[in-house]
Image 1 (cartoon, rainbow, N blue to C red):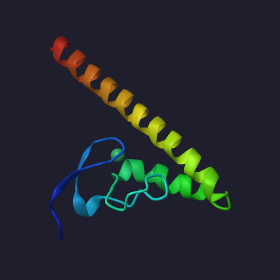
Image 2 (image 1 turned 90 degrees about the horizontal axis):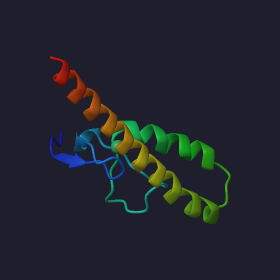
Image 3 (image 1 turned 180 degrees about the horizontal axis):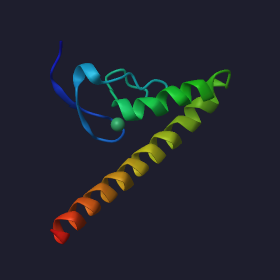
Image 4 (image 1 turned 90 degrees about the vertical axis):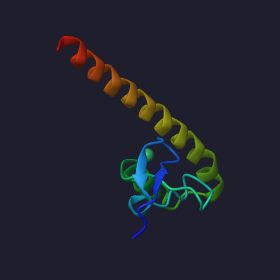
Length: 90
Ligand SMILES: [Zn+2]
């Protein structure tokens, strides 16, 4: 089992390599790996893309990836804020 720590290509969270997932078709490179949370969006996208034109998928995929990355960043900011707020109240 590969315990190497790698980074999710979409949300930058750390994970063990064996926990990572294939991000196609959202990301092109077969070197890229995504975390379990992002993989739920990858799976949903695959279902949504079913039957769609490949050119349309190539246009939509980067938009979805950018929205996911922005949303992950907002989620992380909120987590840090809540953590700091709790520390401040202690
Ligand atoms: Zn991720």
